[in-house]
Image 1 (cartoon, rainbow, N blue to C red):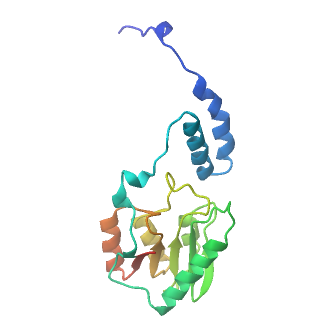
Image 2 (image 1 turned 180 degrees about the horizontal axis):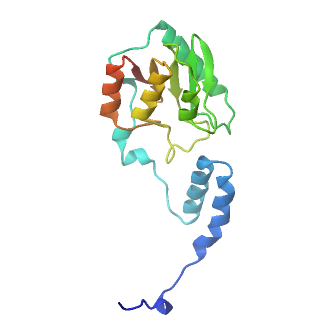
Image 3 (image 1 turned 90 degrees about the vertical axis):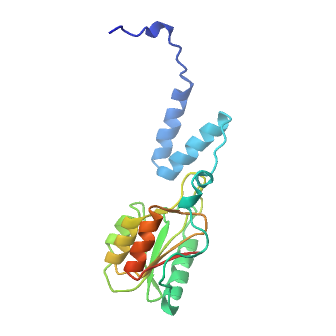
Length: 190
């Protein structure tokens, strides 16, 4: 096997100057890393487009996606969770909030939705609202739920999940809808 001739290879080290910026942003979380990369791309005259342009089937429009609908108490819990998310600070990590019996019982922290849901005791009611963070760049970073999230909601005793219109990703849509219908859960997009 012939050895490659690296002497003819021209290396562009321009990108190496961006590494410290990316490392610094990593201390603030994944959203900060993505924002920094977008800034770098913009400086290099590369436009960032929304990921949903290429995968519109992953983002849901307004409406119900399950046979089960929220009842009066569920609607109160939905509104309570939305208010809680609206009150979070601009630099909050919260994409999710859970309300039960008209009380917010959990707000997502740095650890994410899975950790939040694992700490909720099953009492057979409540809802998860999963919306983008206030300063989240929804071109490249959208709240994502899938079958595992629905299973975690069931384990926590939640009756449904609420997502934001065209500001979400639902993985395995067909399986999620089947699961929700089988477990009498609702999937609502507002």
